[in-house]
Image (cartoon, rainbow, N blue to C red):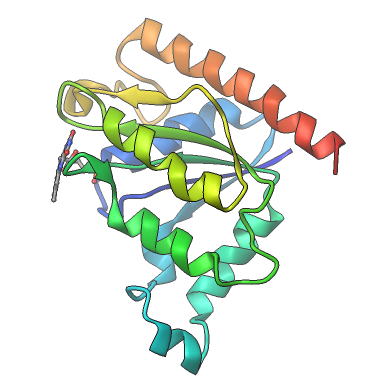
Length: 184
Ligand SMILES: Cc1cc2nc3c(=O)[nH]c(=O)nc-3n(C[C@H](O)[C@H](O)[C@H](O)COP(=O)(O)O)c2cc1C
């Protein structure tokens, strides 16, 4: 299975990029993985005038990565109690491609925050655009609170039980996603 992993945060030292990379290291070896940095695709803010002049190449390139993936693992911040605009903007742009890259795609949502709740509110409301585009969001999500102290290394979370919980979640998600491949 080819799993695309990315963060909704553009920030270089993003906790969500770190969580996405820990998830990638867990999935590597069991699956083919592709890590993408949204910043590389330089999406403008969605504007119908830009679209009318031609969908930006970065949108097409990122849309192809999503189309080529069997499943997506996304870690995204919470801004003011909701999903990050950078992730919503990326979703809005690729929803303009045909066929829609997110259609029928299994998605695991994760979030990291330096606060006590680990982006939990964003995890709830970021399901909405995925549901609208008929992606299949895994029912269980992963919230990583106190992110400033949550990483032991590039491949390990500091708390052993939380790391084991992430391994088990990724395992469950992989089984879930596999069913959609068989049904293709
Ligand atoms: C505009 C803005 C709003 C924020 N709102 C929240 C929030 O509602 N909940 C939360 O847990 N953290 C909030 N934060 C803090 C972010 O979780 C923090 O900046 C985090 O590091 C962003 O993710 P990143 O490290 O992946 O870039 C906010 C940060 C910004 C800049």
